[in-house]
Image (tube, rainbow, N blue to C red):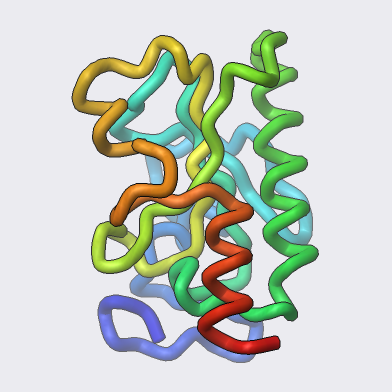
Length: 154
């Protein structure tokens, strides 16, 4: 269920979800840097780094707390697309990147989205706090997977 309280349709689309609308080119002002059948990638409207992108499933998926083992391949694909978009935008140091999710209740949109930031060494003071690794509010992909394993016992 979306934060607005409406169920996604059978195709996984929630008309009230801004990320669903962006992925389906129904929201002005968002340029899709990547789009395929499964995922879309676009710039974050409040960038925390020179390169700050969001990789989002086109089908409405709840936040990272709703992940199960059925989502492992989806999350792996999100990571691959994030890295690919960074490389297409001339980011060469793939060791100086930050990938992760905001942990509820610290996410503003209840649609799974991977933050892709680079270079991580250029995060400002506030961004270093907001995107602090494995804090109460921002977790890495591997931490999300570990928490999902613990939460859902799969």
